[in-house]
Length: 320
Ligand code: NCD
Image 1: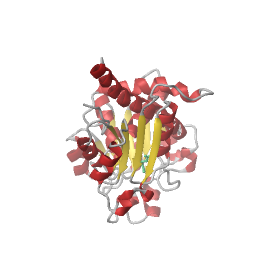
Image 2: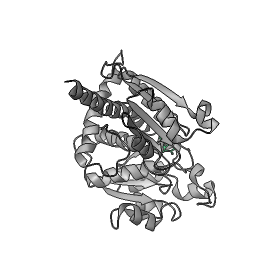
Image 3: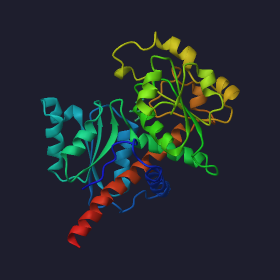
Image 4: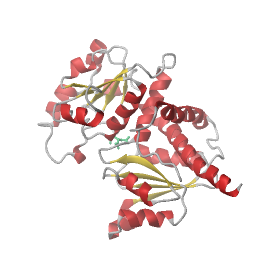
C-alpha cells in the first residue's frame, strides 16, 4: 500500500501538523547557498498538469529537485492526451516507468482520486482538481500563518475567504483544515458565489458563517484570504460585471485599516489586481503573498518526502 495526498477533508489535526512540522524543517534548505539535500536520491517524480499553472508546477518541480529526486514535467499540450488517450491509459503508461510519485492537476474534480485507485505502486498528490481540493495550497497557507502567529499559534483564529468561494478548491481545502484546527471561518462574497446552501451542504450546518457584504465580513478578522474570480469555471454569469464586483468586494487598505487593522492578507495567486485586491494591500505590509510562494516549496518538499519515503520504508520491510 502506498500513501497519497488527495485532500485535506478527513485529515486529523495531528496529520496536518505532521505536514507543517516537516515543512518547517525544510524551509531552511532553500535559504542555503547550495539548495539541495540527498533525501530522495534515486526517486522519480512525475508532474502531470492538465490545467495551466505557474507557481504550483514550478514549486513541485523545485521541491523534488531540492530533495535530489529526478523530476519530469509532462505538459499536456504535447502529450498523447491530445491524441485521444484516456486518463486511465495515461496514468498507467506513466506508472509503467516506475515513478514513485505522480503529482496531478486536472480540471475534473476527482481525477487524482481516480488515478490513485488505478495505480498500485505510485503515490498520487492532488495539485488541484476542478473545484474540489488543493491540499498543498491549504498547507502552505497554514505554514505562512504559523510563521506569522508564532507565539500564539494557528488555533482560535478568525479567517475570512473573500470572493469566488463557490469555484475555489483553495477555499474548500483550507476550510476543512481550519475546521480541523477549530478556527472561526467566514465566507464572504455575493450570494451567487457564496450560496448559504453551498456552505451548509459542503461543510455542515453551523460550521461556517456566510456574509454577502464585505465590511461586516471583514470586521475583526485575523486573516483575510482574497480569492481570484474563477471565470474559467463559470458557465453562467455569477456577477453582472467585474467592475461592479470590484466596487463591492475588492479588498482595499482603506477598508482593512478601518475594520481589521491587525489582519494579514494572503492570496493563492494568480492575482487580479483591482478586481479582488488593490495593489496597496497586495504590496503592503500586511501582505504575506510572496512568503506564501516561498513556503510552497517547503510544503511540497515535505509532502514529497513523506510520501516517497513511505514507499521506501515499505521496500525496506520487504527486503529486510
Ligand atoms: C489556485 C488554483 O489553481 O486553484 N492557484 C494556485 O494554485 N496557486 C487559485 C486560482 O487559480 O485562483
